[in-house]
Image (cartoon, rainbow, N blue to C red; front, top):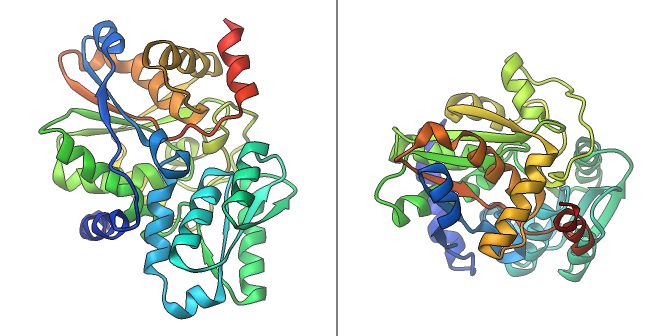
Length: 322
């Protein structure tokens, strides 16, 4: 599966760059490098269009649609970031988008989805409930359903991050990425498994919402209970039958869990030393890297800052808590 994705990722990279999807910076975090004894690099996906890596997968998917599918319009489900990205991609790609969201979605993300021209539909429950409702609506209305993570074109779009890393670095030893439904790490891991087979792919989760982690531990998809976390962008269950599950089984070298306090600390420290506002999911990867980087002393590690879409009030509360 990953061999086929390698070529699909190369094609996706050429495709999405024509529509303004950015090559994001890869910068050394000096204070973290000194602290860990590594070359600690931050991949700035929070600087991507719509504020997260999700623009890559959404844009690639929309560009892969047939004209008939575009005319029918698209439906997807999201906790927010994929919804914003799909709204922007739909506008650029000439189709209409309806986004199903859990009713607990961030007001900031909801407002941005409306501003970008998509139609939001709020659903009681969590992300899995929103996905089920979106599936049902797509079938009833004859519109094309796009999975937020379990779609091979979406995964290929996210995998362009891995391709960019190989352009930006001659070699590196580990890549840290937060895992929700698994689309991001499936894409990156699939590309690097071929291009940099010695590189470790490290999956990172908040302890309170680690559905894919527990599914991987058990070896099957199951309904994992979760509680509220700052990493709301990665929260939610894993859909049965998603292609990301077997890909994650194949590409993830190591799994790391972090606490809410470690997430908050990472957010504060990135703000203090790098002057970046990052959301909880991005801080999960930073926290995991800071927690385990002692295993990579003298090596080069890349940490994916996957997004910045956090409300100012929530960010301020984290910053002021210390």
